[in-house]
Image (cartoon, rainbow, N blue to C red; front, side, top):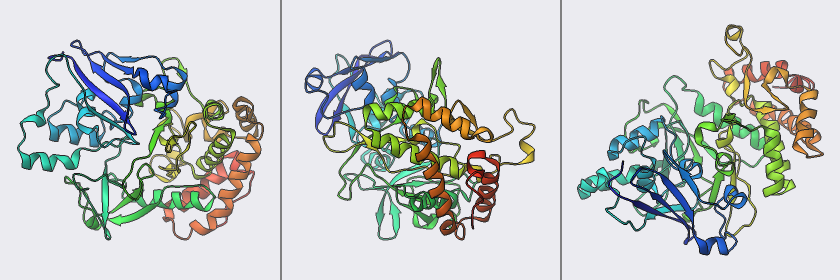
Length: 426
């Protein structure tokens, strides 16, 4: 129960697109602004609102589109931010209020009017010095992995100034996966060599990163820095939304389903053909080919995003990000010790042609996917993408970690669609 009714204003490119109101009982409602609706939803907030402009309500947390702006429940980043600011991890409304000026994309959330007292926050009692320290935690990045929004100062990454937005994301690997930054970097380089547009990445020693709080890494440990595509070089915001937002699904539904909802790659191609363009759908299929080629089994809905630059009426895909050869990580490889698991073979996050099992991805699955996607050239485009990845591999293999090279070569021997293209050349 809250002490009163609290309201937040949702702003996009200096236009109020709606309000989020939390009632005394805890019900949160997003009410689109009538003037924004009358303007044909310009600027665009997201696909879900174009398909259904009605108010959104949530009995717990926030309506899905807004819940996806925050670090995921249970994530290290959410735990740290809430602990420092004295918030309950389950209080998404309060968390959005605190982080509302530095969210993914161009949307901001600010205090609105309230019929009673404003929402109380633990930060209200902090001294000016403590508030300045806490400003370094007032950014929001979606996902589970610990990461920070940072500024590049020369060759070092630092906490942005209070009036500055971070232009880089620095991802901190778990201590049991020290090779993760290098694997992700070289998977991203492979994607670029394969002809995809990708976010810039750099491998950085921890000694060159000034984080707002402690980590468990030694100074010589490696982390990954990723240039943000939702921020310009001069610090302006570019609007984006991930596919979980576009489909109006909560973050917990990012892998396969939410109740009766089931989302496969074919359905996403149809969605993109409808709300974006056939060219964007084709781009998605090319990226999907690389996902299969690289053994990236974490291609869930939050790892694909749409970009709404300026006053665009239709979105495009953002540069590819979070491309990781998951197949090369311990516990995810093609290995005999998986035989005792519920699913002995590696699986995609989302169905392809009706299956998630990589071992079953053959021509029949591809043609099922192509038919369901309603994109006539889908099979040809995907084969072209696989061949592009195969041809690009020799430029990557000499630099990639040995475990990654070994795992990728095994992967190409195991997946029927890949095997049909012939062995990889190192």
